[in-house]
Length: 79
Image (cartoon, rainbow, N blue to C red; front, side, top):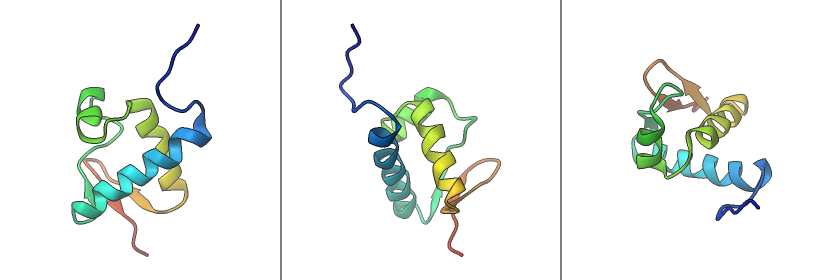
């Protein structure tokens, strides 16, 4: 038996995660000092989400051209 306190599946989790990332970026002048190289603990401390969901959300935001991925941080893409 699997038990989860979070909604199951990409469709339920990723929109919430992308919103959380964009919100935190807007509070920090369009930047987020996290990357796919950040530790799971660091990601959870700032966003309260798993590294797996963080990477999925970042991938979606990048494909939608809403963010740029730099070596040491994420930045909003305000084109």
